[in-house]
Image 1 (cartoon, rainbow, N blue to C red):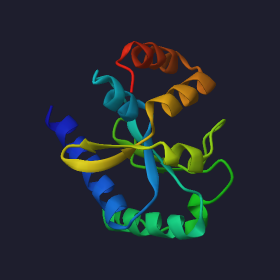
Image 2 (cartoon, rainbow, N blue to C red; image 1 turned 135 degrees about the horizontal axis):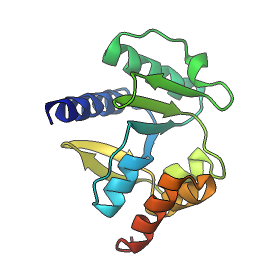
Image 3 (tube, rainbow, N blue to C red; image 1 turned 30 degrees about the vertical axis):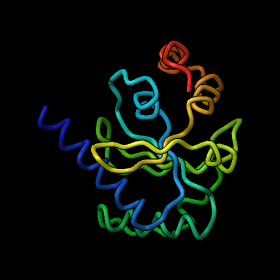
Image 4 (spheres, rainbow, N blue to C red; image 1 turned 45 degrees about the vertical axis):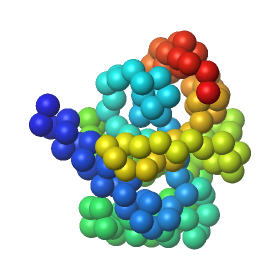
Length: 154
């Protein structure tokens, strides 16, 4: 339980730094599913999708450095199909710059503002999360889809 609280505090701190540095991001994956369904589920990480521009990557680089001291160039976040990992499962932060079947601009225009441990967060919309989960279709995505489709409409 203490470990879980520390991980969530780390996630909250990272979100605060993204917000402070004005990074355009969306929380996707399990934490977004939890947000939309209000049903807890186990997860090994938290997933962020960032806008793939030089200016936004630079802001994210600053947030990463403030968070954990890692110095990377913005090009690390701009490569094709790039995913940047901080930490290791079960307390990893995954930063994506693309998602198949949906543009960041479209998803960001539908974003939903919520909170995580008292901090404002930009979540992918329920509709767009369903779209992403349907595209990937892994076992955990299928379970999430059932939860999302049963939850109250938004």
